[in-house]
Length: 396
Ligand SMILES: *Cc1c(COP(=O)(O)O)cnc(C)c1O
Image (cartoon, rainbow, N blue to C red; front, side, top):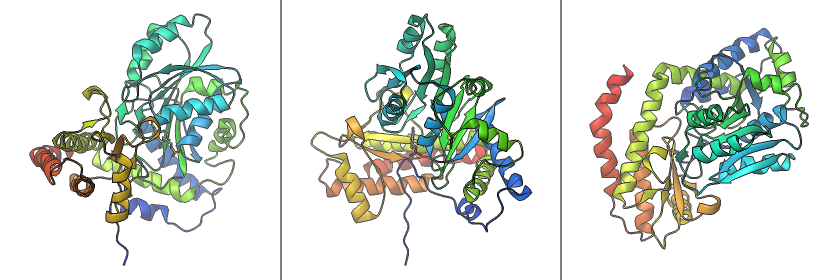
């Protein structure tokens, strides 16, 4: 017998049956018109999810991390300076990657739990009168801390400083579950991955690339071959790839976007907000707090829960996996042990979230943490009960 609980890690996320089926298909020739017929709707769908008025969508066999590498290697040259704030494991890893590629990173150190520091970003851009900064990097949703940053605010900082740096955004754990305004925010490259908001297995890096970023690839000298946008775009013109694409995943991507749009993107975002709010009510009822330091920073796709003094978040994650067969996320880096993370992105309903909250409570009780069984679940139930009708009407 195969028993399967939902997962509550912030990616990979739960997969809808229809998406799994769409990935499972017979072999086709990826140089045939049949592939182009499948590929074009996937590309057009990504364009709509990203809210792109212009630019190119590039889908690479890779993961989000490969998407970062593609973004920098296609647009920058060794020795170039980039500006980035570090406030969690994912913003840290992107910075580390830039350094390993021989880029200079002007790092704005920011406490974990805070978001992109707009005033300091603007000050750094204004101070750069020589135009050394070639790109600004931002993590839209810091998956380590459950913090969402104001991406439009960073674009306003660039505008206020009259700075023409490229603007790259990691949207791996936001895109598809939270609103994303590629054109509205003046993003030059957005990076997503298949296994988060798009509800697919890992295996695709999904990028939106602005005309300004495609122009930069003509002069960028960082080495790249597998990720070279120029080869991709040349092959795209004929509906194909410079190498073998992940055909099944692309078929699944088209299906996933069809599902998101059938629900309605606004309804999808409202659902995630509502699910997240229920989780936050539960956290408050446990007497705990999110790692995000203020309500405007609360992520609708992931909550990092700060555990009580003397407790270890990793113990809860281990126990949940071993005793109950349920996956939560551990704390990473600076917040290892201090938080555990509840992922609430992708295919998820209030009923599924309630099962996760109930499991977390069982683990807390098992570990002797100071909570009362049912307290968080009841707080979420009250909230979901009170808002379910409004959701159903909004979806009609
Ligand atoms: C998951 C994640 C990544 C890394 O993506 P992979 O697909 O694991 O390579 C990068 N950034 C953020 C914000 C993420 O959540």
